Length: 400
Image (cartoon, rainbow, N blue to C red; front, top):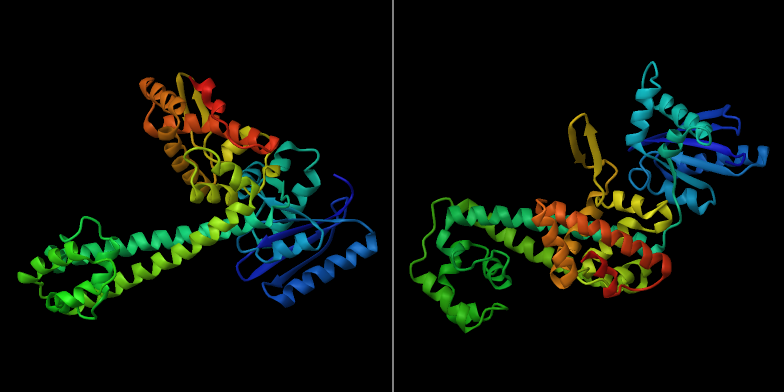
């Protein structure tokens, strides 16, 4: 590494410990800043003082990149400093090999600075510090939007499970009107009254005014109304069911708005567009992968990308024991999106289906067979992006 001022940041949720070292590793200054605009201003003021004095570029290594570090990490990049992310898993292993007498924020900062100094001489130190490359803005936006969508989807699932359990306890016959609790007409029917028992008194005209309910569903509801019964707890559980139904409808609207924005961003993102050209890789899966990957410049090879996506289990061998284990460096969100996309890809491409079935015949479980195909598709994705071209069916012919 060229001579430069090295800055280490131990990130906290409210305050950050900062250490500044010269190119020879000598500690120049150590201080703490609050996670406020005033603290950020102090951070850059102190660094700029040393930069002007020494006339050297600045490199910053920090824990928690893209987490509690926001927006400081973005400000560091905008300032023109080189930004490095500290891999916490590998940092912990480094501490085990080179243990210290204690653990404090100040000692953590010094350990980060020590790693900076050893980076060019010790391979393990190089693995702990990973430079953060510039990521296209559209992929940064996709990352935030898809994570938000996933949170809303998870909340919707939790609310629906709770609502279904309450309906089963209060009025199982009402729940029996539909096979799926998330049917829009059923949710709108539940949300149409403040009191759940009022549903049994609605006239046919009122029922038909509810969006999504036509003659067929109105007839099903009328049949239920003739013998509608509720348990005693409907007095206090009923309002909960109505509130949950309304919340699910709100979540569905919010998710639809997000999916519209994600669709537009996918057109702007080259990575998402390339991924969508692959059979089975839908808009959401492609958007999640593009957002989590960001840029291929983060990865030294397609094997590194496969490891990040969870498509590359590691060998585990000791004596007569031969097996595999899941790596810790996997991005779980990206892995889930990749597994979903590959599973759909299997059904749309005959060659991939034949490869999957062959792996199953060899004794592999479903997820293992999907990951085996996913490992090959990572090579395809790497080649597509590097060569700037869309997917072609011939990419999988070698599987058979």
